[in-house]
Image (cartoon, rainbow, N blue to C red):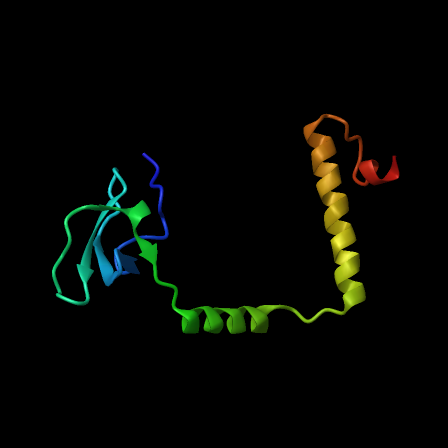
Length: 111
């Protein structure tokens, strides 16, 4: 069975009913987890992952955004526009191919 809340897994920080904690088990095939709460150190019973809210680490998000920006190739606006045109042409060709209408690369554009 496919899990409904893949973002919630062991080690993820969550909140449940205004309590913070960390997932220590799950989600299992019923999408249930267990949480060790910060305030008491106690482990919960089974809690459905849909009832847990993942705590977003804003600093980690900012670090990831900075890393992604560094990894982006620097391109001029004209180069980006040209690349967008090529991507659009390829998508149109793939769609035409899936419908059995393609006879050659660039066919959808040339029609």
